Amino acid sequence: MFKRLSVCCLVLFAGCFAAAADEISARTAWLREFGEAKDPLPVLRRGLDSQDPEIRAKAVYEYFLRRGDAAVPELRKRIRTSGLTEGMNLVVCAGMVKDPALRTAFLEKIASETTHPEVAREANRINFPFRRQNIRLCERKDWDFEIVKVKRIPLADADWRFLPDHGSVGHLRGFFKPDHPDGKWQKRGTGYWQGSRTAWYRVRFKAPPKPDCNAAELDFTGVEEAAWVWLNGVYIGCRDKGPSAWNQPFQLDVTAEIKWDAENIMAVRVVNTGNEGGIYNPVFLDILK
Image: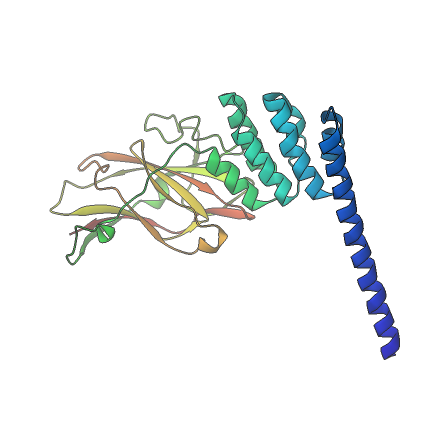
């Protein structure tokens, strides 16, 4: 029995070794053909349809370098079936597209159609123009005093508006702007949604008259999984730490953006790479001193 098992293991190992050797040999042959070709485009087109994901990944990048923006229609066909390395190369190529509208559309298509969350996050990162480091009062180097939460105001759950963003284009259409028409958005409380990777929440709330305080913060007690936040049309910051952060609360300073004794409009873009996501726990306005 032991001898039979040993023989089976040796045969299996030999088969794997032979397969790996064949794979390396095929890649070497294709690279040699590509390097020696007077016209590399036919070789690259065959590489795009190769069964080897590494050959396809190399072909994607080299094909784009030679054809530029004209390569996009062909590369768009590869998104759904691409492996991880090939998908990342598609993102790199999309980021180099010269036509701004074409670049944006290509990155959006990659983010919405890829089967790899890592590829979607990278495409969204490159295609997202908003950047800000949000510094809370407790993180300021010039602040070395005790911080007291003097008031905690819940944002009414019934006042939220919600809209799925199937193409991840809401930020391009101004969903975060205070005057964006959201009357046809769904009226709903916080909670999960299914059916798209990206969705938007908007809520109006009135802040009290300005109190004696040193800072104001928005406290998100539950968002799955990544969130980008605007207050009164101003980009505040984000929490984008991947799926593992789904149950981690986070806070953003809004001291400069809050309108005291007036209506405020907050917009939150939520992206989830799993089956469902959303703002699933209350959001608070905290007043600190």
